[in-house]
Image 1 (cartoon, rainbow, N blue to C red):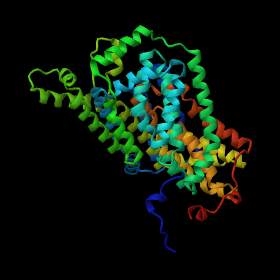
Image 2 (image 1 turned 30 degrees about the vertical axis):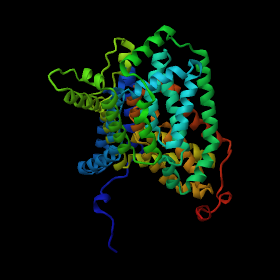
Image 3 (image 1 turned 180 degrees about the vertical axis):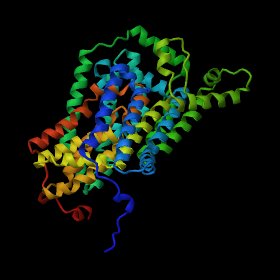
Image 4 (image 1 turned 60 degrees about the horizontal axis):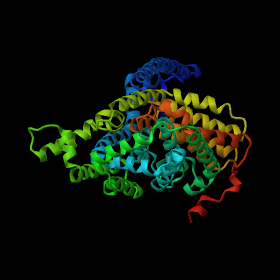
Length: 496
């Protein structure tokens, strides 16, 4: 009988558990050293080197097991290809921030935020606002890139903690994203698990709602127990400077409205952000002509050409404020595609490591070993949570962290008579929720770049993202709200 197997695959040795763990341990040690030596600046080069060195170690193990460089290179290319969409969005958001500051959109949001947000309720209000908007549009990234940057600005102007504010923004954004039927991950998780989206959302309510309530209580406590360092005179000065520089008004919020409408209509993220950038550029040209000319700072050019140069510069190199107030200038000097290059560097290194781990079978070997620890229904769900968190750390992408464990563990759920909604909920309670807590994950890198707060700095305050996996694991341990197959309606009946 002739074998139909690929002869190239036959020469590959199955990796041992030690093979699979060596790159992981090496990465953990190097990342720990990077954080020790560089603290919150570790993502500006040190983490990248750690990821590349760990990828080289995995590459050597792959060669030992019979993999060629060509095969591993293809794995890297495939892994990086998965992140291409995220990289394009990152660059687009850089341009959006630059034009929105130039147009006065971000300054207007900061101005009105300072008028209506009470410092005592600020953190909780930020979380709730982001949750509502993310629920309506299904995108945590869009919320962080629009409302998020304004709320961080308001916090800085009021003398509140930008780290806690970033944690509140991410908590609310990921709650809304997770519970929205328009979210990519909320559709992906049930598709991988083999259930329908509305059964999936209903089942998530049991872990998600208690988690956001706990998070809101935490933000209320922080709001009432911490004092804003901004004095009334300083706040008024900031508002006066914003008024003089940008003349804030409701009309300057048009670019924000454009993005929210397009996101609600489910237009893909990249064209949505690009159109939001264009809307910002048009708004700047119509309402901030003199400011653009001053920003362009080139008297040799005709005014119209100088305006084009100013907008163009804001898109690729960001906006540089010159209000005379050091705090406000540092707050508004942001944006531009060039400011995203470090984040892209981090993501590329992370995806290279994840690609080699996947193509050489090292990641699969770890997952198989973890599955061997399963002894009960509860331990299977806890194992799923841990596996997805580990996949977020290794593969640096939340979609891979949903798909790989979901596919590998799906059969085990069926064998144990567990409904698919248990798997889909576990995937979201771990892979989706913890992705912004990993500095080199696409989500963590995006949030840090967009909000201007290092991942390791906001991580302790992302209460919802920290609590939700714990709530899910507690439910599993006590076998609470775990659906059996016989308890679930047939999917065909649901569809009908």
